[in-house]
Every structure is written in C-alpha cells, then in structure tokens.
Amino acid sequence: MEAMARKWGNSIGIRIPASMANSIKINDGTPIDIELDGDKIIVTRKKYDLKELLA
Image 1 (cartoon, one colour):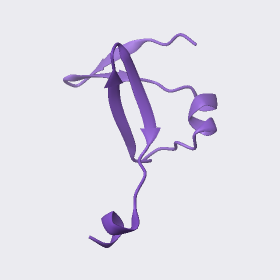
Image 2: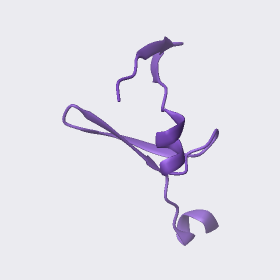
Image 3: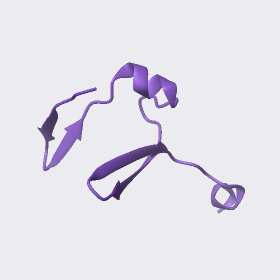
C-alpha cells in the first residue's frame, strides 16, 4: 500500500490506513514503539510487563 508522508510541526507524519491499524489493534491514543531496521520503519503496539506497570 502506498501512502504520503506529510509535515506535522517539526516532524513528518504518516497516516496508517484503518485496515492496517485494526489488524494490530491500534486506536487513537494507543502507545506504540517505533524502530528503524535499515531503511524500514517498524511500528508495533507497546508491550508492558508487570514490573513496568507497578513502577
């Protein structure tokens, strides 16, 4: 799927199509992790463990 990157303040924003967001259960306000793997950007839902939640 092709998308367009757009300026958003001093950053660049990318819209995630609803079908993709739904498939990994990302909604408005869902914490995510973003990482680079070479020339790829990988977006995943943030995973918490019990120690983090109790800290």
